[in-house]
Length: 260
Ligand SMILES: Cc1cc2nc3c(=O)[nH]c(=O)nc-3n(C[C@H](O)[C@H](O)[C@H](O)COP(=O)(O)O)c2cc1C
Image (cartoon, rainbow, N blue to C red):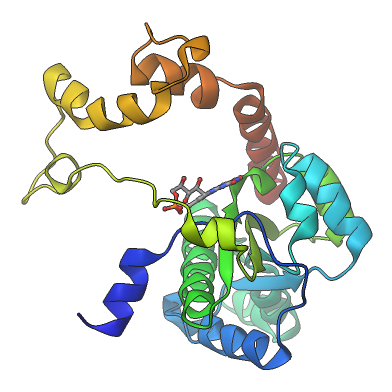
């Protein structure tokens, strides 16, 4: 099999790291690969904050839904959707003057610009994940960086048009993590459609989640084997307190972005 495909198929999220720093040459290669990611309009609508301060790592381990392993990651990168650099460049580069000359209002970044910048940030992040994997470095996304926007904004001195999208933990995997089973995925017939969208009917959803049901409830009667996967995911993920905080926080981000 092709080496790149093999690497992608074998990757898994790594949440426990050997207590050793990331080799500087490895870090440089991961960064180089990250910055070569495709980017909308070749504008690089993202920034990366390399978090080296242990006090900040310790705090993120709390603010990102109490995940202590975050503090142990030897390399921790925050990916921001970033229009601030271009917005500042527009202002200093004479855009207000050309708009005034044409009697046109100057536009501010809108929701579409934000979504595009989020795409840029995530695509760069995934390049980092694959490059890291190729160099023996494990990684794990932290989506909970979307929570507590106000604290993260103040912590990283984020301007209005730079918003957190994801946090990536990197480190050399422990042997237990290396040996751990890979997680499963839903079959492609539930995910990939031809030409147009097709909602799943209830039995198909049951079918899709049957294997997940075995994994979640196997040997764990205490979590309620009478639930189905939909009920479990709804309670544990979708309506959990951390998800509610995420939605509050993201609304605050959108409000900040859209406030003139
Ligand atoms: C957007 C996103 C957010 C995630 N957030 C977290 C997180 O906060 N904590 C965590 O331990 N894993 C997180 N993960 C990792 C997923 O749990 C993991 O990818 C999934 O369970 C599949 O496992 P695998 O990556 O080992 O194949 C996140 C992944 C993605 C793509």
